[in-house]
Image (cartoon, rainbow, N blue to C red; front, side):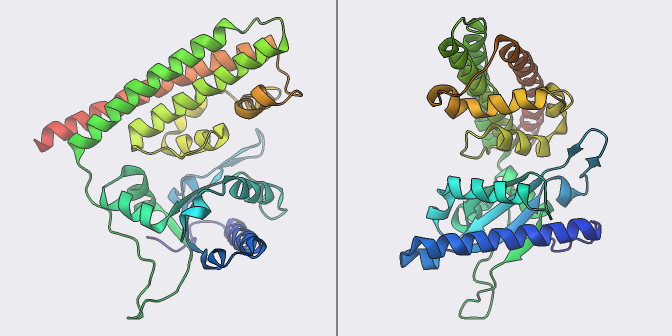
Length: 314
């Protein structure tokens, strides 16, 4: 794995140093606050940068306000750290408001054992991260021989036939879910009361989430265990930026329309203050329909390549 950020300008390198600093500080504070003996053994083992900043395809457009997000894989020592979704969400929020960062940072969290299992299995998503990513931080604790105690497994060559079969199943299942949720949401767009409109908002969230899961699982056989729509969207665009065209330019009021969709998973069901309108729901439904169509097209391309690889290997 690479360890150099020399392909980035000094300002961006300083930004990543600050991101690493905040993550380590926040984790140390959280562990101390836990107070339990077992928590003292919790550690961040590796922090890996992947996506556009690792590949050198990042961009910043001052005119439109669009800029690449930062994608990080946090490899941790204990499963309990992967279950602290609220904590990692707070870290992401802290980084967004930090004066030295001020951009979206998306962190996916897995144990070293899980990552190595995926690598030995030839899992596409993690293999690409390890092969193309940049190691920002590593816990240097040595083993009894003086070697690194937290070594990553060598990525194995994936089984093309098994990958094709699994991807095809993911595609069929999540494609159907996306279409069903979208159809249900569209049936209630013109609801006369807030309860009906909020019901539609939740269904549309599920349609968008299903579309992203269909795309991620079909193309990489991986999707993070989160309902956070912005995080799924961010990971998906690191795989193929064409999916972003479904949402159009990030301009007002449409950035708020997407944010309302993101919040709908929880708030549309449980928050009395959540409000939406027929206009917003219609915009969301139209763009989710585009998202599903584009995701299906990209998935079909991927399945064709996997099928060709599987047949070649027979």
